[in-house]
Length: 93
Image (tube, rainbow, N blue to C red; front, side, top):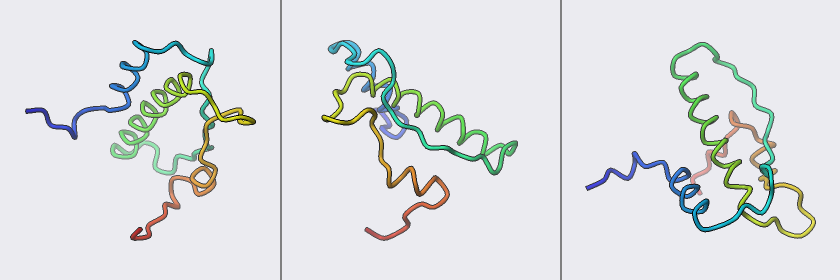
């Protein structure tokens, strides 16, 4: 039995989509926020940075395979980009 917590679903999705679809765009269409590393050099922070970096690269590659809605140039989530990674919404909803 597989431990589903250990499966990188973005990598699985990219592998599946790349086999059955042709990229819609020649390059990534994912808007990135401007992050600021505050704890660079600490083991946990560096590991989290590398994890996020790898996930971002997979998401950028996936963004090539999905048609954008009319009048959009990139995939984005402005509300999350404006909040930044340190101001997460901690509501119970």
